[in-house]
Image (tube, rainbow, N blue to C red; front, top):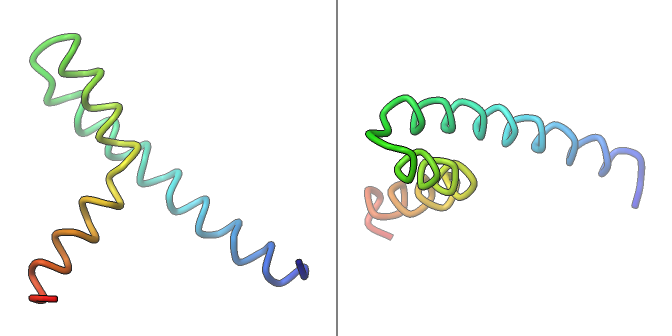
Length: 61
């Protein structure tokens, strides 16, 4: 693995991390109870899958 490939992976990890933090704050702030907050954390882990699914559905792919 070259140095350029490692640097490219680091930036995508930072974007995913910021997205995780932002979605966790959103889901937890809208949770009605403890277990809904736990579900919000789980949703925050897989938010990119929701995003890609909705984008593909919108683009009729």
